[in-house]
Image (cartoon, rainbow, N blue to C red; front, side, top):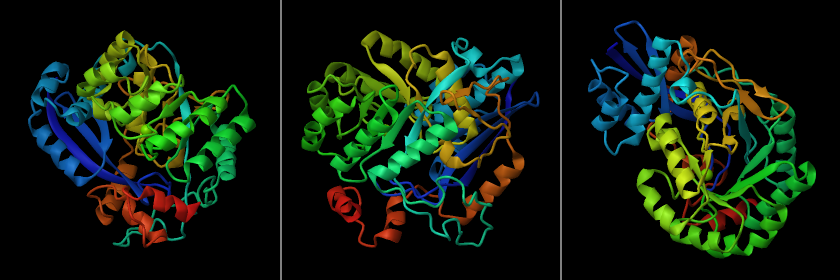
Amino acid sequence: MRISAIRVTVVAVPDLPLRNVIGCHQPYALRNVIEVETDEGLTGLGEMPGGTQLRAELEDAGTRLLGADPFRRARLRALFPDRPRVQSAFEVACLDLIGKATGRSVADLLGGALRDRVPLSAYLFFKFATPEDWLATPAGTPAPRGPLGMFGWSEAVLTPEAIVAEAEEFVRRYGFRVLKLKGGVLAPHAEVEALRLLRARFGGAWGLRIDPNAGWTPAEAVDLLPALEQIGLEYYEDPVAGVEAMSDVARRTRMPLATNMCITGFADLPEAVARRPARVILADHHWWGGVEALAHLGRIAEVFGFGLSQHSNTHLGISFAAMLHAAASIPQLTYASDTHYPWQHGWDIVNEPFEFHVADGSVAVPRGPGLGVTLNDDALRRFAEIARAVPAERRDDDAVMRRWFPEWVPKDDRGGMRRLIT
Ligand SMILES: [Mg+2]
């Protein structure tokens, strides 16, 4: 079996005005969809974060893979040293091909599924009310028919009480048993109040997490430790920026810290082992080099005493399938994985729906072969058309923020922004 053609397509899929420390999600989330064809008529799928720059990088890398054998993944990795995103895009597509060629699932190729269902975490966001013209495109491309009236579409969620209402909907609809709050938006004490209300509403059996994306000062992060310990968190994710500050917070609490910001690749591990900025690593196959890379990370994490969870960016069904196969087969990946999927409201580029099990918030691992998903050509074409009509260079959360706050000053003046909306 030889690779005969590679296609990379940028798609833009509707997203909501979800808040984070940087700003606000844009109306459309960008993704790159990778199709790898072989001389035997099989097509392997991959998915990566979006934007034309990464697409050019993937297309350039793809030309070097024409004629290659998808089974020879070690050679693939060696072709692109120090480029884990490129490795990941093609590794996942090659595993999908191998699975289709052999009739086995990607989980089987990773060592075999240890579980049939994978626990997921609710991803609670503060958000603006969605404007009427949110999905308008500059070039007049018809907006996708939106699920107007669906949960989460129109409402503003900008208070601790509104987060509890959002969580109730997430639990009712999807059954989540772990609730993660995307923080760094309101004042820190208001976000801790949201966690306190969540604990009061749901009780001790639910796992709670908060992720301010390094938006808190070291003093804020430390001052809030007693309150957070009393609430009882599963983990405290990236309250502050950098290994030194994270290590300092970690030394002051028995509560586990977690990160997807200061341990983001294998090169970060020696310092992480020495300095211990976190006890839980939120791995991401897009950044670490693929799902086989996450399996390698699992062994290392076990040896050095780190727990493993999975990070999520806005993603579609190809990446979701890859995450589920990884979580099913990597023994050390025991924490409920993050996912943005419910916020996608069913907009996707694959034909197979992912159903959340309302008893426990888990999703069944696709049976395969390969990833177990197929591309919906109509959806791919439609979302590619939208990508051509909207700015697709990169995500720009700051520009969206200026729609609500023309005076928005990003990143280096987060404190000023908090005062605007609390
Ligand atoms: Mg995070």
